[in-house]
Every structure is written in C-alpha cells, then in structure tokens.
Length: 235
Image (cartoon, rainbow, N blue to C red; front, side, top):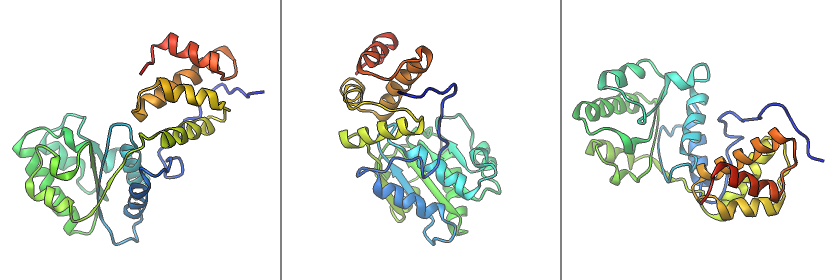
C-alpha cells in the first residue's frame, strides 16, 4: 500500500539531495571543495545543459559559505535584469561570488568590466568564486577575455546527467524524497516519453506525483499514462 501525504516533500538545495552519477561526479567533488572554507581552492566554473544540476550545486555553495542569507547575499543569476551598479552592490561585503547562467550575460561593456573587477577583488582576496553557464569558458559570449582566461586556471567541470542511467537515478531520488514507491515500468515509461532534459524529466514526475496525491491513487503505469495525457507533458 502506498502511503499518501497532504504536503509535497520538496528537498532544499543541499549536497545530500544532489543525485550523484557518472556525468556529474567531478562537478560535485569540485563544488564540495569550493564550499569548504578550509580548502585552499577558491575558483570553480561549471558548464552543461539546462537542468543538469549546475544551479543546485551553486546554491549549495552559496548556502554553505553564507548560510544565514545565501540567496540574496552571494548568489545571482544572469536570467535576472541588473545593471553594473546593481551587480557591484549585490556582492558588496559578500563572502563569495556565485554567479549563474553566465551565457546570458548581456552584451554591455559596463557589465563586463564590473564582473571582471568583482572577480579580481574576490579572487585576489582569497574569497571563493563559483560561476556557471551553458557553455565552456572559451565559448561564452559577452565575457571579458581576461576573465575567460582566468576561469581556465581554476577548477572546471562539465555537468551532464542526460544518459539513461543518470536519469533513472534522478527519478528514483525524487521519489525517495517524496517517500513514494515508483514501479520500474513507470520509471521506464517516463524515460521513454519525457524529454532528455533533466528539468522536463522532473516536471513529468511532479505532474504524476500531484495527480497521485489529488486522486489518492498509487503511482502505476495507467496513472502515468493519464498524467501524460492530461498535462500534455510529452517528448
């Protein structure tokens, strides 16, 4: 009998809730080093496809280095809109420089200069720097050439969990976090019908989980098919 709960059990960003697999083992190891104040390594750049876990690892680093106010004090995503002045103000007095989605940095000279200056200030001062983007350092657009070169001096790791073994591990981990049992045939069905992007995979499971909770039914293959048909989650 599957147990039902009246609330979703969504884990916070943590290293314990991160699903380790062959495609992200190096990134996880490097992130733990950066998150450790006693480790001398202080520069990390992560790259890989959307939904592969880069943001999860950056948030882990931010929370570890500044647990009181990680999201507002030392983490920023380039998906947000900000000026060079905003960028500098955001990290004034911060314990670490954690910037996500560098491939989305606008093509603005002032922003390039501000980020380069921030990087120099943190790096030369021995403070931790963790950055991430969709592309390897040399392929990042709108980034100061000096910063690109410096990124290659630190730890660099690709994060990719799009192989079937990794995707299966992710589904099993999400189910465990929500304390529900998911049969193997359901896992196989989700893997066959969801996009290879990890974010889409998680969305497919979350839709199934919500339907299971709403109808107080066990997660089965027929319910998985119903969820896919009703939500339009498709490859």
